[in-house]
Length: 119
Length: 110
Image (cartoon, rainbow over all chains, first blue to last red; front, side, top):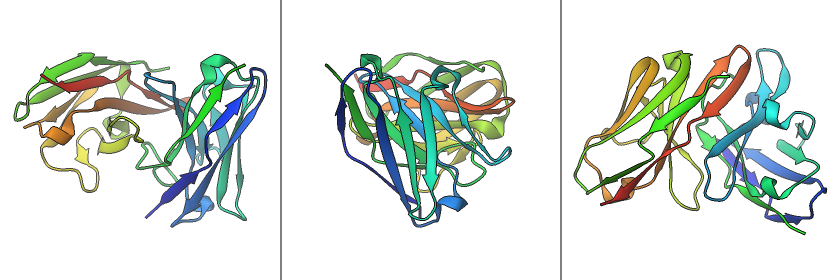
């Protein structure tokens, strides 16, 4: 059984960066493709990006390209999502999610990490 | 990019009633790449249906999915009190690779 445990809530000022972590257990990170999905308050789900095993690279939604970086530390089975140049519209709950290695859906989700951007 | 539209935006029903939720895609979606999720307030989404019609592990059989091409449906045969929530459809596209979610349908108590 896959478990994803995320880091805690963060408060950031506009223009700053935030880095959210996602610790994997039950499997190793190399056996999974981790993706990131965010949800602004009262809004729907928005896919940000994740690992594409077909091309062996991380892919990003066009909206976030140039501002988001997703990395992995296989020694600790932890995935990271860093979002820079934060603005108030980035206030959201950020989830990591996976459905396995070659995934077309998300069977497992982290608990979410609230990022608040406020001056 | 494939855009998903869900209708209705809100569905007001009573426990025991049947719920029919629609998800329409701007282009044809491979059925194996269409999923449905349930989300309750303060919780992460939960996978209900994958491959358009297969129930995820532990999902009661009152939930069923159907459809193909650009039109997909999630049906809840008899609403239980715990089914009042928001439901999202999601598709995966491999050219270029990426995921999109629909805007959601809220099922609330009438």
